[in-house]
Image 1 (cartoon, one colour):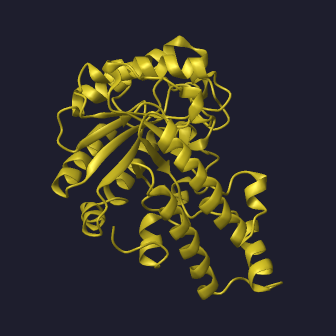
Image 2: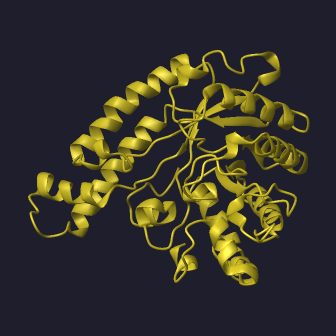
Length: 343
C-alpha cells in the first residue's frame, strides 16, 4: 500500500510508526478496517482457495518487546490493536472454511534487512540473545492463543532469515521455536521453517526426531531480484520454471525428508525483463507490450509455476492484494485472467 507512505521518508513499518508518532494509530487502524474485508475471505473460499498465510510482526501483543536503536526516543513505537484484527481474521477464516498459517515475518532487530522484515537495511536479530529469546517466547504465545482454534493449520517460526546467518544458529532457533509451539499445540498443527536461502541438504536429518512430527520446509521462488533473472526473456523464464525448478522440486520431494511448501511466489517480473520480452519475443523495439501480449506472458508464467508447484505440499501467492502492482496481487491476477478462476 504505497499510499500509506506517500510524503514520508519511512521505508518500513518501524520508521513509519516512528515518523508519524501519535498520528500512526488512526491511519493504520483505518487501513486495518478497510483493506481486507469479510468479503475478501468469502471470495477466496468461493474460488476454491483453502488456506491463507498471514504475516505478523513481533510487536503484535503490545509493548513488551525489546528495544532497537531505530526506535529513537520512542520506546514502543508500534501501533497496538493488531491482535484484535488477527482474532477477527481467524474467525473469518473459520466461517469460510479457510485454514491459517501464521508467519513471524518481522523479528526483533530484523532477521533480513528487508523492508517487510520491519527495519530496512538492518539485520541484527541473530546478534543479541534477547532478540532470539523474545522471538521464541512470541511463538509460544501465538501457539497458546490460537493452538485450539479450528482454523489454525500451522505456525511459521521466521520468514526469510538472511543467507549469511549461520545455519547452526537457525537450526538452534528453529528447534527451540518448535518446542515452544509444541507446549501448546498438538502434532496436528504444522511447524514451518524457511530454508534461509540455502539448499535443503543443509537441513539433512534436521528435526527428524519423534517429537518433531509435522514439520514443513518453506521455500520461496521468484525471478525478479537477481541480475541473471532480470536479463531473461519469455522463454528463459519459462525454461527456468519448467526445467530448473521442476528438477529441483523432484529432488526436494524425493530427498528432503519432510513436506515442503512454496510459501511465496508471484507473477512479479522486473520491468527490464518485460521490455526484453517485447523486443526479443514480439519484435517490439520501441512500443510497449499490448494487452494481448501482456496477458499471454503472465498466463504462460503463471501456468508454468502452478504446474511446477503442484509437486509440493502446497503454495501461497504473495500477496493477496496490492494497490498498484497487479502482478503481485492474487486477486488482480485472477480477475485479469492471468491465474485460473477456480482451484
